[in-house]
Length: 123
Image 1 (tube, rainbow, N blue to C red):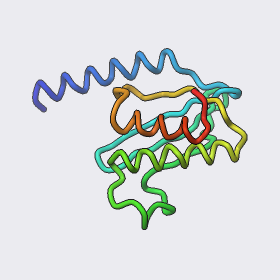
Image 2: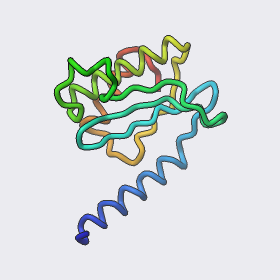
Image 3: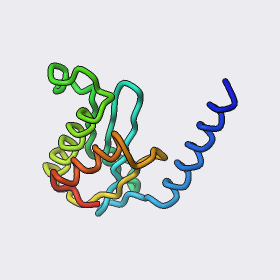
C-alpha cells in the first residue's frame, strides 16, 4: 500500500473516532449510521442502549433491484434516504442522531441526509 493510501486510511479512522465520540444513539433518539462503498450505500438506525438495529435500508435491497442501475451514486443515496425515513416513521421514529461514520459531509452522504430530512426525519 502506498503512503498516500495509508495517510487517507489514517485520516478516515481519526475522523470516524471523533464522530463516534460525539454521536450516541438512545432509545428516544437513535443513531442514523451511514456506510458507503464504491458500489453501494447503506443506512441503518441503531439504538445503542440495547445494541439493536431498528431500521435498515441499502441500495442492495431487493425492492430496488429493477429501479437502481448503480447503487453508488447520488440518486441512489437520495432514494435510500427517503426509504430509511419512511421505514423509521412506520416504527414511530422521528428524531435521530446523524452518524456520518467519518465520511465528509458532501456528495452521497449529504444527499442521503437531505433526503431523509425532506421525508420527515429530524436531526
